[in-house]
Image 1 (tube, rainbow, N blue to C red):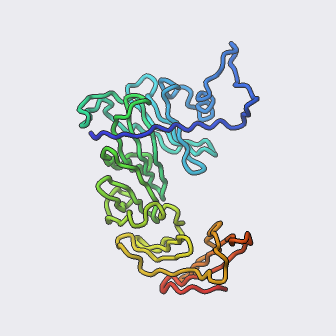
Image 2 (cartoon, rainbow, N blue to C red):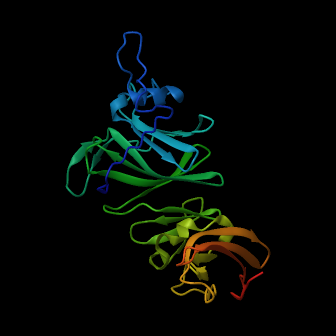
Image 3 (cartoon, helix red, strand yellow):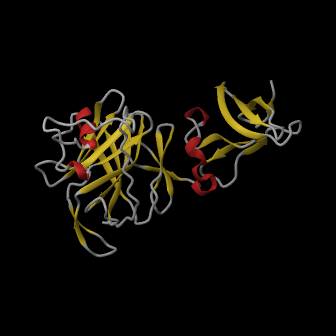
Length: 295
């Protein structure tokens, strides 16, 4: 097993409470644990051994995960819900063996705490990045990427110590940091190709699925430049620039993807000039040649 160090971040959101509200109490007028309030919403009050040792994490705008040691069991479990409908999507036990031996330092620990740091649903496959620890304050543990399909674990991929988790959806595939490099995987956890992630850094995380052209190529908008990129290559296929020569030092406020046709993308730039004047530029980009037109 590998060792991984990580900063534990537990995000718990209680809605509908202001600073003047009181915490609900039970029949004996003792305060109710705020975590217990959330667990009741998802019918998980009797799921975990200790409510003070549960990790809760929200993803996107509709997914939430709960992890912790199970009640009346030595194992730790993970449950994922749709936070809008409160419907359970996935329930699994990521670590069958809770007694693990770490390489650095060479020690044996009992996993009692689990944290899900990354989660992405793509088609009928879900990929998560989970780490098991001895307790919530520990920095030593084991971490995996886990591919899930039809509520079953397809495959688990071990992560190396000090490796930052990356999971990006690229059409039906996934871009994942496998610690010795960043790779594109299919939905069965099979490597398609190694990609040149350092070139694009986290910019491709903000590309919409509409901007992805095929398994390897996409249109990447960065500032006033527009590029057609190939994930496998160091240099873009072409690069074009928005003409701002008639504007006074414009600062970009937002870039909006408007529409696409077979060979043309339309974007709308909102900007503020040095004088404070605001405006918009609409551009049409030929995705084959990079030619830019201003309708």
